[in-house]
Amino acid sequence: MAVPLLLRWQGVLHPNPDVVRRLEWLAGGLLTLLLAGLPFFTRAGLTLLIAATGGLWLLWSLVSPPDRIRPIGGWLLLFLGIAALATGFSPVPSAAAKGLIKLLGYLGVYGLASKLLLCNSRWWDRLLAGLLCGGLASSVLALRQLYGNSEELARWADPNSITEGTIRIYGPLGNPNLLAGYLLALLPLAALAVLRWQGWGRRVFAISTLGLAGSSIVLTYSRGGWVGLMVGMAVLILLLLLRSTREWPALWRRLVPLLILLLGAALLAIAVTKLEPIRTRVSSLLAGRGDSSNNFRINVWLASIEMIQDRPWIGIGPGNNAFNSIYPLYQQPKFNALSAYSLPLEILVETGIAGLIACLGLLQSSVRLGLQGLRINEPAAGTALASLAAIAGLLGQGIADTIFFRPEVQIIGWFCLATLTSLPSDERTSLC
Image 1 (cartoon, rainbow, N blue to C red):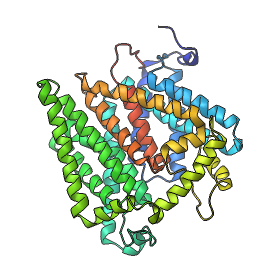
Image 2: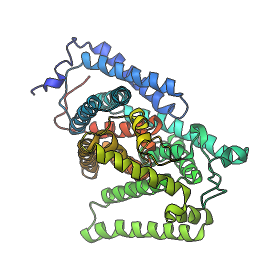
Image 3: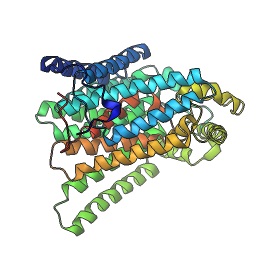
Image 4: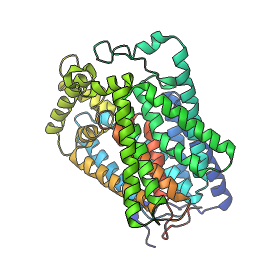
């Protein structure tokens, strides 16, 4: 196999099996620690761990033979190139450079997770166990807030919104929207663990995480979190149904998933019409500018669109520092913002149309790889479907929020991409 020019630096140090084996365990331990501690580490701690994963990936690459560039990796390299170009032409290059460094750090996490899972797929369950430990602890801490001082919780109730008085939990992350984004990303993975893991102890652990995390998402009263929860779980249920019924007669293969989705829609309609807290939050979505949260987002979106119109092709450069430097020139009075509050808009602002095309290519490639889980008869099939559902949930929340760019959420997304990258392939080259 011809080695791509970009990868010819890999393997320049002669591989030593003992060294590679130690690197595998070191990488597994580091990634497990990172995933388990996402909601608890400080920003400085997360930065240190992310930098360590990048350095370990570099070291492992130097002592292991090069592999081919996989589809997801190819689109990520293209996006990295566009982000670097956007940084070079940015009106605030210093601020954009900080965003580019952050992107490189996240790519290091993705690269190390991909290399570890390609080397030994058994690490997937260990990494998932670490992730669910963090999710379970976060959910318990969040639910305990219901029995504590309500004054702190009340600060997240907007007095100018039709949802005034709603008590929202936020757990160790300090923000109900962020807590919802973090938990909804791991929920499909927890659901798969219930089906995948053997032994009552493991399954009780997965079921507990699934139930408490789902309850916590509901009690954050995050509208974006609710949308992401419904999208992620609906996609997971649909994909698992399509896989489990693939040997059925054609008529039943089509009818059963449709009937399940209709039943879910009916239950959702009943909840919206009969449960007052849910009805209030849904009503706020339909209130337009009559709801202060909606009004704020609409004003930020309009300002972001003006930013895109001025720099449509490669944007202002990656990262929140670049956004915070340019946005005040476009913002409406009293509508300060840290981001565009919409994932597609944020990508367009930072990297322009070129960056959005690369992200759409990445999404298409991820969907294509994830749908392999409907056909392959391997344990990895479930991991592919759950990862695809988690990505769908993150995109659902990302319609009107940019919580995805916070490391507590984004790293789970990179873990899902690494899972899809490591799916079995006849062309796989040994990395161990």
